Length: 311
Ligand SMILES: [Zn+2]
Image (tube, rainbow, N blue to C red; front, side, top):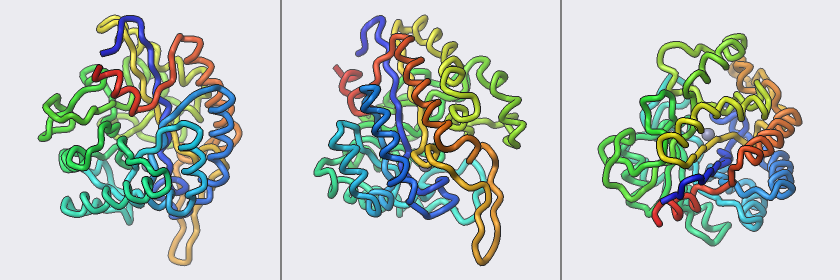
């Protein structure tokens, strides 16, 4: 268990095709990862990168470098397919069948371990669409952590927990540790609402599927960090320690297009997906790291957090 006064932050990166499911290009891995890895080295911070199998297959040199520099390298499905319950509709990305999940996760882990020489133990589902099928399979394959559950209200689990095999949102008997993504909490939604709305993202109603990751680019590192303060205060008041898990994507740290054209059509993306991608995002990440250091947080990987949690 963690001790009173402990403050840990997990910086995680979903390492995948450019703009997630919206392209099958992997050029940002080779262009963005060096910038991110250089920054993490400069700040003396270890992070968790969850790798799409295809991203690892096409960019093994970057996976090798991240692993060699002491970062955890986990899994993020084979090719960013939806593996759990979908939260909304994405053209061209219907969830795979439940019986396909085992094979996809196996292949994902094989590709990663063939480069690092080490079995990956951490996972996050694309778009945070995990479910009981996924966590049961992760458990069966010996994964130790999952971070697919988004914290979106004060009623949610605010700390890591062992989930039930019947419901990822409920506490249970799995040895897998669910590390909730620190999402919308307290007045965070009201504070971020206007700018997200200005960029066309609807935030009313069911906001479970809205991740915190665009907020770094839309508000900068200092403000992004300050959005977590109510959650940190609540965690410290409840248990005397704090665990915050944030996530970004390497492609956010190089310029991304707002329009994708192909012979069969044209896709216009929300500004939340491409606004301030590139150097602004990198500067914001540097500010965020400094802001959390100044709050007394230590940076830790998902795997290391589980070790501490189980002690
Ligand atoms: Zn993803």
